[in-house]
Length: 158
Image (cartoon, rainbow, N blue to C red; front, top):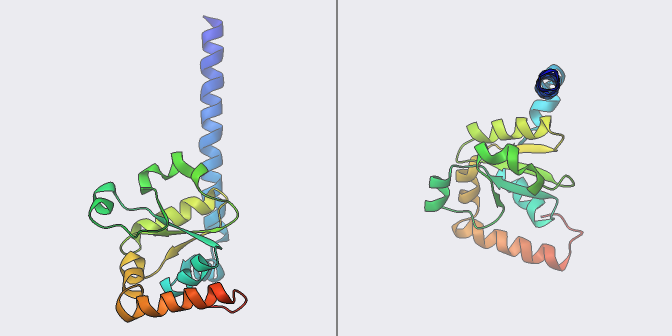
């Protein structure tokens, strides 16, 4: 019985220390939050497009499965927000992770979570709707031309 009690105590202490570490990471994020952090955590879709072309970034669509069944971006990763904790290993640590949803409510939650896990993360300020707007019609044509020009001369920014 003493062994079981000891094992249960060790498990509870381990779990408690993990919870405290999580709170500590978020506490640290909040304590250090300032105008610079606020500016650094956002990106507009046109700048994101440039970073994606340069392979410096990864877009993570964090919408619900029902949403992606009816409309997919066709690039980036798809990890629903509620699956993010168990799928962190799919995200590269050497690139900027951009979380995106139609607007920005869930993507800002994902960005905060990823930052507390040590990722350089931002959220898309104009959301997937803004990104889609920048990748349709004449804008899509211009984007493809920029990608082709970038491919020919990668030293020139988009």
